[in-house]
Image (cartoon, rainbow, N blue to C red; front, top):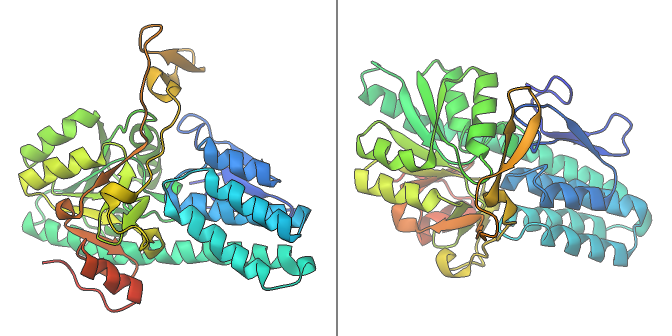
Length: 369
């Protein structure tokens, strides 16, 4: 999938061992560009400007960013500054703070001279863990797709609606919401993805469609406002989305617009699943609707759109009148009552206090009724 960089990975150590290579997702789907991150500032900027995005991937990128900071200056002050800068770069996705805390703790256990090596080992372990986690999510989630295929009598593809991008581009490899889709495709289960365009940054139209095309998985892009119509007419079999943070009660923060999909799915009695690693769960947030911080991003993401012109050049054009302001909340929170289940690497559980507590404790998970 990635002909110019690490095979099937979005991030990897550079061949010279002195930097990190990341796939620049602001250039997709029209250009494949690998960006070199050589300093803490490079890592912070890549996260903030969404060169890398997706909760698991920004966590791993931040982990490598801490290594870059400690390689330049392994002091206690440098560790504290780097940790604060990385955590502040994106406020909603909890994986970022979780990953930074884990790497910082590993680095703090050793003498300053050994901190860079410890941070690098920790970051590489996080990357490997993410790949294994996503494979497990796929194995648990494919059960729902397989069951839906059996209900059709294997007469047609299972249609899975997703919102934003929670595939391999949002992770180190494998994906979260798309992991069950890829596993179904590998098993020969007929599956088709309905990808919301996901305004304002169009991650569904640009990124989800791009990676599904590369993987040979059938997909169709629809306008965000078409999803409710498709759900109402039962033209979708199930919904699977990712998450940036899950509260202790099962409330889910994800890309803006997810809540509306969940409402429509609930009304149409279509199962609505959230695929996420356990690291996305934040037990300190008791009530997601009230407690999860929602990032507000630049107005320009709403007032302008980017695309490819007829001559092949990449252009940005304004779509609102001069002088008109825009509000741009990047996420919303879907209440747990609308979520059929959480697909984690430890199994599928209800989106509830009990379900969340089960996977946090590492106990065997059970599929929601």
